Picture 1: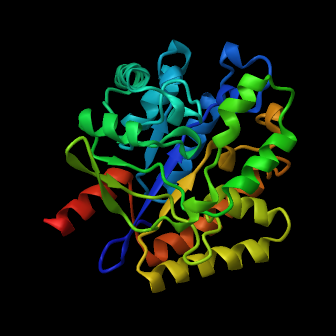
Picture 2 (picture 1 turned 45 degrees about the vertical axis):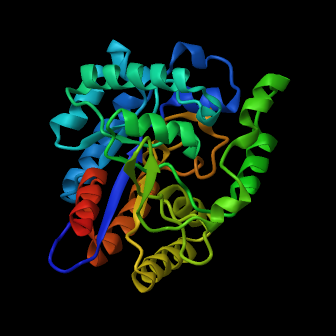
Length: 317
């Protein structure tokens, strides 16, 4: 399904956030035991991708890779020919608050754990909750990363943060302080949607943004389309097809973000019922995912993140 020819390039990636990481960010008890659904989401997503001939990038959390119980699931990813990326070790969306030394320790632990679990050392990074700072970019460049894809150009970050705090449980003032920058600022909406180079640690680091709707900068990642579909499948389908059309008109190379909950129903993770769209049966979600991927592959040449990055590097040289 991925096609080739003269189609413009696009990329697919999946942030492999685990059950415990969502519970931790939400302030729920019990996350310290690292409950997991990787044994469900990994084979289910791999089968979905195999049926459509797609290779994508899975951004893995180092803490999951450090646990032996997750190794069988994580090895399936690299064994199936998918790229693995670094999604931090502790999956804390306040990574932008870390000092440089804390970041070095975070990346070292994540890289070692991911390589041990999958046999591959990551060369691409996405910050948890799109968390990013100049120091993060500096450390990535110093460690030889080929690309970052943590920017999320949208004006809606403050609204998402307000919704998050409305749904969150009881938190200490310290926990609230850490989360006050979740999902970014209104000004993030002014960021470019096109891949570009950022000067960091004396070298050019490629940034591939998570694509939002050109001009309007509303989200178009799969979870958002699924959320719209919970109200109207027709509206969601129309929104997505118009998003692809606007990307082609604007010359944007879309980088589509997937999440585990795109492949999970309420029956798979009842603890996460607070997430939009988690009241939907998994069979319905997979149908919607197919409605997302088919037109995407029809109009674009779908690659994993390193394939997208290599294409851009080649165009620049």
